[in-house]
Length: 218
Image (cartoon, rainbow, N blue to C red):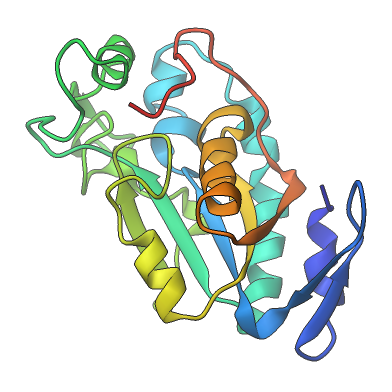
């Protein structure tokens, strides 16, 4: 797993990334960087994790390395794709009431009406609210792509695969939170099911595994 600094060493359109267990050669012209769930609900005071008493310090430590990686990616014209975990206001896309996805997120307050730090009305894990906005330090640029997802995988019932195909992307550089759930599942599906290669940025991911959430995409 390479350090975030590798992106600053890209020369031309080809790059060799020092990684474990072996170096990875990528074609920058066919690469994209995916930022998984770096949003207020997971990494900001007042967000879902913080309100639930979950330590967000590991996610906060990933913010600065992620910002550096995104700056380098944009400078190299690598497409930046953000994935945001969020549900429709009626939670109709969260799955059946007794499904692990629905039940576990309800335990963490999904759908609950709250006040954002600026005093505006918001709701936990609901689309188009402060809670599901990308962290301000990592705010998307106009050319970036932002997609909602409603499962741990970024590919489940989203346009991610179609977008990657339209951009002729073969190599994925992945950052975000948490490594052991959403980042891992998204990268595993990309590798096993979609035959794309990826590298995870070591300093730009959070490894915290919440005991209250089962490792399932359903």
